[in-house]
Image 1 (cartoon, helix red, strand yellow):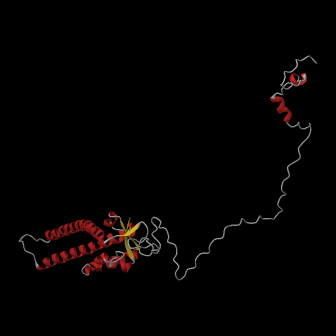
Image 2: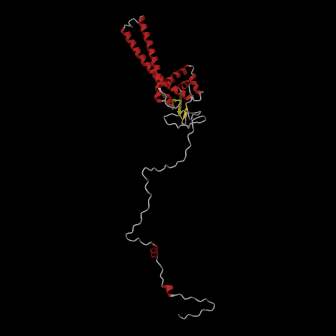
Image 3: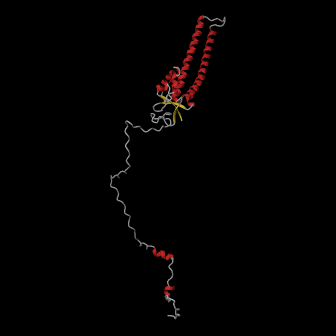
Length: 270
């Protein structure tokens, strides 16, 4: 103990600090603290025990099916039940007018109106007129060449007169030529409409205006029998003062008499 001056009056005594507590204890570094907290290493040759696994399933055992949410049973076909409408597929038509409306048989389609069909008929008439005119000119030219050759071989023209038999032959030839032309014109017209209806879905005039002819029930292309019936009824519709084709302007589905009889409609893409 060293001598310490006496404390001043009124001041608290200062305690003595041991030398070991003041300077003999050095601070602990961080590396030493981390090493002290690390677990002790495993002894040499020691193996950890295996992790337990689930026992294998016995032979022939099938896991139970995963439960699924219950589904509502389909509604029975009956009074008041309407089947869901089918979505139309390109080229496949529609399904029994499931989505029929006032403007079209199915989404994406509309009934071709009266005036656009009139324009299609006019275009078809121009095309047929050109074809039949060429046909008539060819046939008449051939008939004239045959007649001139026959007259020259028989000596006609020396005195400018014809015998009664020669006049009869010429008359029969003209009748035969015009009859042949009439038959060929009808045949070309029938083939034009029927062939294009079946193979292309419409005539050239209808195709240019984006229309096609389809079966009323499902929108599929029409066959040969339907096309022939439709053509015959189209002729009747024109012959009876055009009433059958004017009917298109007032019928809800824009059908003429030929469409109603043949169960067809004329539609176009919206």
